Image (cartoon, rainbow, N blue to C red; front, side, top):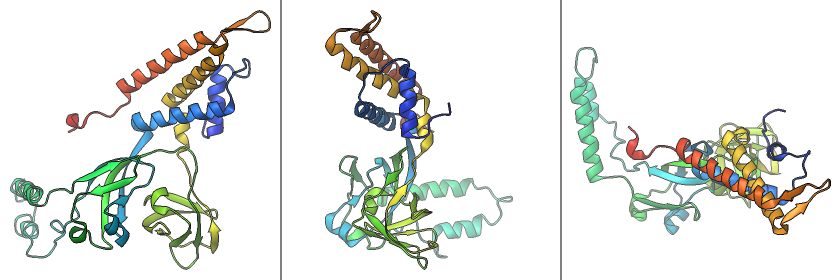
Amino acid sequence: MASPSTRTEFKSYCLRRLGFPVIDINVDDDQVEDRIDDALQFFQDYHFDGVEKVIMKHKIQQIDIDRRYIPIPEPIIGIISIFPFDNSNASVNMFDLRYQLRLHDLYDFTSVSYVPYTITMQHLATLNLLFSGKPAFRFNRHLDKLYVDVDWTRDMILGQYIVIECYRKLDPDTYTGTGTANVSSSTTQVIGNSSAFMSDFIPGDEITINSQTKRILTIDSDASMNVDSAFSSVATYQTMTKTGVSDVWNDRFLKQYATAMIKKQWGENLKKFGNVPMPGGVVLNGQTIWDEATAEIQKIEDEMQSYNILPSNMLIG
C-alpha cells in the first residue's frame, strides 16, 4: 500500500492500523474526521514540520491607515519580526558613508583588511537601532490583525510595502478561496468577486484558476492581485484553489497521533456501555481501549516535546 497522500488515504491508513476491516471500529465517520482535524491542529501548533517560515509583503492602502492595522491571512500562526520600513538603509548615493567606505577602502579585498569595514558597519547598525529601531508590533493569531505601533499618518506611506517575517501552518488539503475570480490573457491581474484575497492567500502562493497554475506576486486588495504571468485564456467567475502539501499526510508523528486519537474516541464510545459481549463470547472492554489510547497519546506528545520542537531562540547562534 502506497504512503497516504490525501485525507481519504490517511483516514483509511489510521483505521487499518486499528484493525479495520478485520475488526469493526465503532467510530462514526464524522468522529474520525474530527479526530484527524484535532491531530492536524496539534501537529501544526507544536511540531516544527507543521509550519514553514515565510516572508510576506503587504502593500499599504488607505483602508489600512484608517483602521490602524494590517489584515493577516488565517494560515499565519506567528509573526517573528517586521523589517524596518524607514529610509535609513535605502540610500545608495555617493555621499552615503557606506558607499564611501566601499569606494575608498574596499576597492580590492586582496590588498586591504575588511575588519575595519565590518566593525564600522556594526557600529552604524547599532546607531540605526538606537535612533530608528525596529517597529514594535502586536499580533494574535485568532484576531488575524497585525497592529504596528507607529504613527500611521506619518510613518505609513500609501503604496509602500511592509515586509513581515512569519510562520505559516502547512495545510495538506487543497484549499478553495473565498468567492470567484476573473482573468484575461492580456494582463497578470486577477480580479475577485466577493473575494478575500488578503485573508486567503499570501504572496508566493501558487493558485490554480481554470486549470492554470500561477504564482502570486502581490496582493493589492481583497479583490485584486497580480500573478507571475498572464493567463492563456479568459476566465470569468472561476474558483481559486491552492494545492495542499500532500506529504504532510505521510508524516510519522501525525500518523501515530491521529491513530491514537481515533482509538481514544473508539474507547470513549464503548466504555459508556461497560463490557460489551461480542459474538463468540468475546468481551470488548471500552475502558481498556481508552486507557491504552490515552497512554499512547501521552507518550507521543512527550516524544514530540523531546525531539521535534525547535530550540529556544536563546540557544540559536
